[in-house]
Length: 169
Image (cartoon, rainbow, N blue to C red; front, side, top):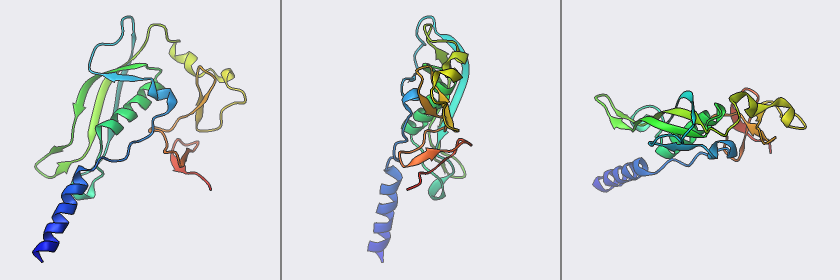
């Protein structure tokens, strides 16, 4: 019986240290830099952004990762037209009185580089031909980009209500 108990404990400890799978980042958001440092010279402030990954406590919760929280923050910032996020707060998982909290939370200030077009120019409706499908927005480059946040996994699609669902096979 001790061997089974030890095996279960080892399995639980190993599971707690596995990194969750990486969430894909849209091409649109991949260019957003997320750093603790100052924004580029001349960048204009667009506002505060925040994102998180993981939820709940202990065994019944969903363990987050800093990488996935950063990916989500990039998506949120890209939707505002940002190219840079200055991190102002990083909350890592912690052990509280009631449980081990599994969430990573990030907050920051979103900035657009001085040479970037104004926010309204990022999604000019006439730039995409044919027009984008529901759930997608037209970028300044004339490419339809999914509006789901976070971006959908490769085997998923973004519905018009901005929810990722399994792709039809």
